[in-house]
Length: 375
Figure (cartoon, rainbow, N blue to C red):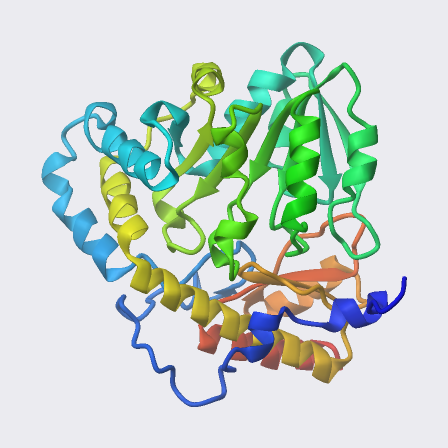
């Protein structure tokens, strides 16, 4: 390919935004944190960098909203807070509240769709590796997953995925940006793919990390929902908003699809979390702060990998996937002895490590431990 980076150069390259980011060792951030200092630097004595959590949230505005919601906690959420959040999201996305499905995290949205389209031997096409919340759950109900390997750049191979869409395939799953690789698909290519594929099966696009991208508007596929295509877009308040413990997520999809997947609802979001989510959605200052601090953390990992000679994928998320050449289970055990928890194995990349972005102190503890165990 002319005028293109080699695979190794591409893997070692950070995104443009990350390359310009201030490192954790530079001068203090010009922006003060809109939330109190993170109190969860460690969990049970461990620096937990294994679950892609955002330690900077919830924001101050979200915390205040959650405290104010306790008087409402005696009420079920479907008639109040749940409907209010759906209306707020619908207004921001330019759709009706009937286009919105609120779930207990986007994980519940994934599982609802997995059951809906996986029952009775339904087949699913998904990249491998990608987030398994939907496919694993669907498989427990008899679904079959066509696992399509990522391309040489660890990006979804859309052409190969399209070839796997047979008449038996009911759902095509895209995690964009992808977990665990942190890579994202060119939006024009993804839009063309989703438009064509939605004529054959329902497209499910998991956008859990999309708010962390520099240009969310260019990368989201919600415009396809507005065109009444067979598309489901899911998002979560667990990542940029730092509300993983509150379990609030949502889907944007055509009203008839929304009605269908809600038949398999398993839980009900809590009032306190719903009110916090509403405040978070409007808190653009915290979103900018969270995005900035995570970009700094990514750059720290890039610099560390360069120092140690490790390849890595350019990430647009709150984690980095890098190649250590050491079996991940052995590395997990070694890092745990240093009180640092890292990501699980992601076959077939069994000597790659996924590390979540934590606080500056978290990342420095990770760097110290990694240097020690890789000697």
